[in-house]
Every structure is written in C-alpha cells, then in structure tokens.
Length: 189
Image (cartoon, rainbow, N blue to C red):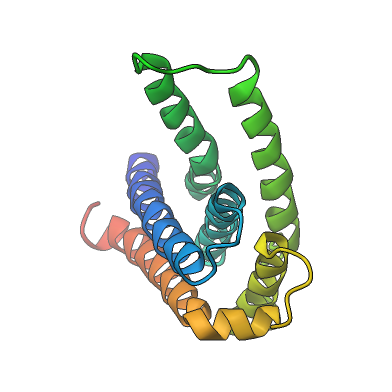
C-alpha cells in the first residue's frame, strides 16, 4: 500500500509541477502583455509563488496523508527548483556574469513570497474555492501592480480572465489528485 501511495504522490507532484509552470507562464504573459509598465521580474516571481501555493492548496484539499504531504512539499519547492535550474543555466553559459549571492538573494525573495501566500492559504480557500481564490488573487494583483493606478485590482483580474483560468487549474489539480488517490487501489497504480 505504501508504494502505491508513493506512486500516486509522485504522479501528483509531476503533474502539478507541469501545471504550475504552464499556468505561471500563461498568467505572466497575460499581465506583461496587457500592462507592459509592470515590473516583469516581480510579475514572474509573484505569479510563480501564488500559482505554486494555489496548486499545493488544491492538492491538500483532497486528502491528508504522509505520502500526499511529500507531494505537497514537492509542489511547494517548484519556485526553488526553477531558480536553481535557471541559475545552473547561467553558470554553464559562456557569457554569464553572476553576482555573488545572486541565487541566495532570489531564494530569500521566494521565501518571503511563498510564506505570504502559504499563510493566506494555510486553511484552504474559504469560504469557497471561488471566493478564496478571488481574495488571494486580489492580494497578488496588488503586489504586482505599480502604485497609483486608477483601475482596481478586481478590474484588472476581470479584464484578463485570470480567475476562471486559475479556478480551472485548481479544479483540475484536485480532480487529478482524487483520481490518482482513488486509482491506487482500483487500478493498482
């Protein structure tokens, strides 16, 4: 039984990691395309962290077990793995000039952002996934937006249809986790 649970957790972590990167790229692209004045690095980091936290919260909403906790921790590590991958590419590049402490400074920023989103999602998306997701995404939009904008964060979210897109991701992740956990006994996964 433990091996089946571990296999399900690995499938969930793999699928979720792909989802995190895909959704992050799409949402970041929507933001930078519509609002080129937004800081692209901030948009990318904040989006990666909020999508990661939402993905982990989605999987956590399904079931709590030791093996699933491994999948959730793995999902929450995606921003750090992504940083390490990009840093490794820079190190191996012939023309790379990397400032001392570069990777560590990014890690500290990711820590702060992940702590922020994980704290807000520690008890899940309440009162409902839709409302909870709207609340966290309004916070996210406030964090990535330059000060002094005349339009509201809610208007920007609506304009780019980010909430329905992220809600589909949340639902897909919960459904996939449920399927993996259910099929561990039904299909011997």
